Length: 581
Image 1: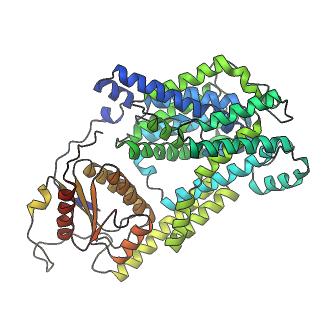
Image 2 (image 1 turned 180 degrees about the horizontal axis):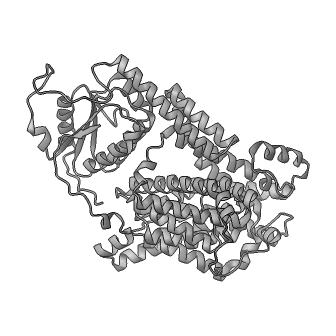
Image 3 (image 1 turned 180 degrees about the vertical axis):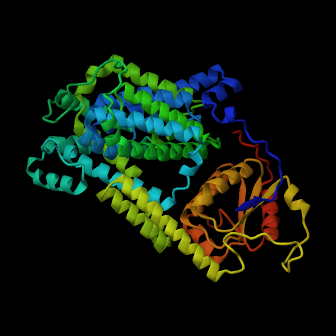
């Protein structure tokens, strides 16, 4: 598929190294008092963000708020202690609310706990059999489609609490019946709930713009709870609906297990495992992009599996890596997985000390929190870009989005992936007809074949400043993660590098998005990136995803790109240290 110009012999890592938790790696490297202080502060910051979110997500999932705290405490602890990422923060995720609520409505709470344990076992096996890399093969339009679909469902699920509507018990989890129920309850609007929700939204949005480092979500929830208690506002609270939250963790217990129950919840367990794998590895990749470090995907899946089993034993819901909290952890100066462990410890301390105060939290304020989460989840820019750039990607995106919203997440992902595969086959056939001189899968050729064979230039392969990487054949979602990983490593070791696309017949949105991520990382670490040999179609796909001049110059050939790279390196006149793994 692709071949780097620099030749190097890299030993394959031992199996024990691949399944060593990052916490062990950090402690082996040396851990000091300054690192401990940084991790404690980062853990406290993340816990402040996670407290209201965990309760809000549990309520939106159709269960009680303390189960979100159990998930953040137990699941989050195990993910940080055993995971393959230095910065991953685990806990309940908004993306699971739809699946969890549907499982509870069909099988009850015991069914949910059993499905969560089974999902943990599936994730554990996925990690043991080293299937983590294959999760990255899901096409980019499918990922954007189902995440945006979940955001829409999450938003619709908050309308009742936002407006203080009196809805019938056991309302449907499907979106159309839910909208009908909301419309029929329009006469029960509570003005006090609307005021609390609007004030909470105003505080969160205002602080995000004016004081972005302040914990806007926690401040909004605390202010709403204080106003509700002081003015005796007629709004529903955690106390009035759920009777408060306990101040201690429960004793671990197994849910009732039978062969019939296992069969019944197996589809839900598979959905939990698939979404958990996608969410956790996506979150770990976000942390990699922010820090320049690299996670171990299979160890991460093993940790996710153990964390889900542990969470369910303590009465929690599905746990996974969470993008927003992981990003907060990085921005707060975390040094190691201990920051995530401290985050879980602070959650437990909150339950011990301040659990009675949670009874005053109005549900309208938590609904406002989840509206902000849904807005941030929706891949608005990516959605618009995919609709503009490619009719085929737009079909995959809209099919996945529509099925996720109106049918279910599993159907959305399966159909989206199938359409993505068909689209790939179609593009391969098209490229074979239009650009016969560049076969999608290159064939072996004899040295005596009548092809243009230029003399080998060892200077390019051994250049200490500029690396050249040639991609050959179709660059699509199946190869994007592998090529992206190699490019990451090259970018860590050179001051400039050139990606040559002269032998690429086409590129899909997943691959273009991978190159855009590489370009962002290169810019952040002051590495010069150039593209050479791209056809007009390939260049159009790259520029539509943000890989455009002047940030990323385009040259007609490798030689021209290398000259331009040296010129830019000389102009900057500085070297860049390698980023450790």
